[in-house]
Amino acid sequence: MTPRRFLIRFPPALLALASLGPALAQPAPLTLLNVSYDPTRELYVDINAAFSRHWKGKTGQDLTIKQSHGGSGKQARAIIDGLEADVATLALAGDTDALHTNGGWIPRDWQKRLPQNSSPYTSTIVLVVRQGNPKGIKDWDDLVRPDVKVITPNPKTSGGARWNYLAAWEFAKRKYGGDDKAQAFVKKLYGNVPVLDTGARGSSVTFAQRNQGDVFISWENEAYLLEKEFGSKVDFVYPSLSILAEPAVTVVDRNVDRKGTRAVAEAYLQYLYTEEAQDIIGKHFYRPRSEKAQAKYASQLPKLNLFTIDQAFGGWTQAAKVHFADGGTFDQIYTAK
Image (cartoon, rainbow, N blue to C red; front, side):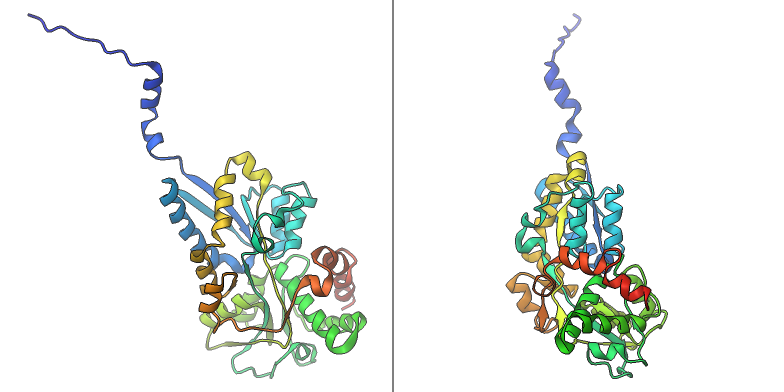
């Protein structure tokens, strides 16, 4: 006798779910783009690897985080011109503010969305010199001596260069009295600058690899990297006064909402405040915010005499208008150099 055959009919919805089997089991991979400033390359290599593992463990989703680096001002302009950043981790809040004022890429109050004004780490500015400090450079006033050549990037394109400029300005204002004396001092300093690279990493290469200049005005973390790589060639000294640099971070709202990456982008920036990330930040010679990480790295990141941008210059909006806008004090100093 011929066996009877049975036809089993599955509901259409069940058939549709079955066809999605692998996709349901494994979420589609995600890609983020972090647009940052020059010296953070090594930091974010480690941060990105750690966060990708964290995200994978939490969601089962593979995550690739791409990096873009350059002078902070140039990076802000690239985002405004269409670079599809999910997050911006620029050198200074003034560059990030430009993302609001030029196209509404982020809201006006972007800096209130994360702790410490959206600055998960800080840094400062130091002076990198040749091994043994043959020119005897100890403080800012040594940088205006006629026998000293200074390497620093262009404050029109580099966030780090703006911190450098303002640190020197405030030192001179306090030591010699008033803005007129400070402007004369900074003019002499830039008269000793043979070349203005567009970003801090370019100036680092100019000093350490091309052997130009006697002193490099540098991010603290970059100075440690140079000492690690070129220990037999460079030293660095802390000046008597420097500036508290507070690089800020933000999601780029227009991009993440269009790309559907807001959740992972926000989680990525929140992760920067975790103890795991704060430890990575300290390892890379940035100044962490967490007390635990600060204590761990206190020996390599000493307490210093630092002032803030708000205290000395009334915030980034005012500082940018006075010093770095077209026709501002930097243009007056450098065109007359």
